Length: 147
Image (cartoon, rainbow, N blue to C red; front, side, top):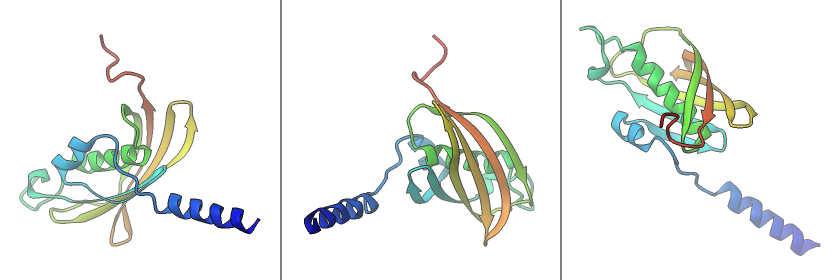
């Protein structure tokens, strides 16, 4: 019995120490310099520092589409399965983000029905919520719906 407990503890420890790698959207991650701080089953913490090329004015306000894209990437990373796409999103932008701001997006899945998943994402600057969104995703059987 003691051997079984030791074996179980070793199995749990190896599972806990198992590193999870991004399985999808790698080109997006590299192109936009998203840094994955933590990747677990159904959870991702992603940091991005917004750059000048993402601004809309001389004061350095970041284009809301760039913020949405970072949150979208975080939702996809939390699921971490190939051929996953967002089919619906409801988002709130709470405050403007400026060039040089570093935002941490935390994404976690809530509900799963077949190939459809609900993912909540929050964006934080210094522990202050600047973005909140709910993303509905599906995993496609094939890469394209068009033939």
